[in-house]
Length: 262
Image (cartoon, rainbow, N blue to C red; front, side, top):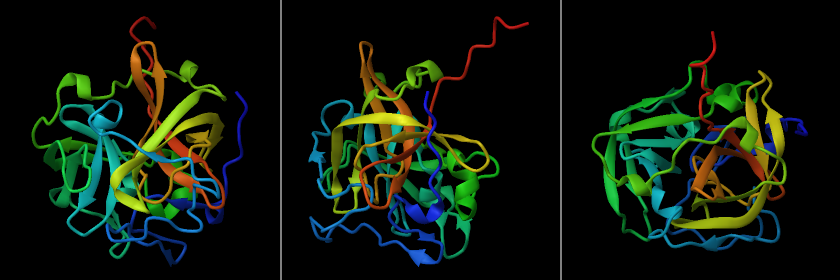
């Protein structure tokens, strides 16, 4: 597979709603913000995103991750009690610490003030060594696993992590949808995009490069492909190009089976 050079930090931006990068504070996605803007990072001039129906899969397994401090991102279920999102969504840029789990909430299939279920996060897990302060070196670790305080979905309304490295090929069709800056109260999605290759952060951690449109607020959204067996999650959206559609996702792949190895 063709590898792509990792873009330097000044060419990419976090996609969560309230973060500080290189001394520049990104605007929080607010419900009363404008519907359209002349330019959205990660989207480009020709916006292909469309509103989708959260009552239907795959969108029914996606929800909004939000904290009591006001930050909002996207997340998705991989079990009735487990949500995946981007780790930087849980970062408090003022204190340079991750927020406590007690102030994190997940609203499943959130849409215009309504949602299918709500749960609090009782605990979350972030890969050792990850910090948004070293994103160029640690971008491939930018993921968080949220453990909910009770089950909120049936097994058919979750994604299974069963993709392998062999499923990742440049040109593979994918979709990306989340709660984005200019429409933070509904899911908008690019349903016609592709994987463009594999990139790596400066420490060598892999990232999936894609050309899907997605801007602030889509951090934590699943990068999905549709297979004969249903929707398959390939990665977690974390970074975007500054001036064109596309970005990077942390890979979320099935662990290799080592049971037959000596």
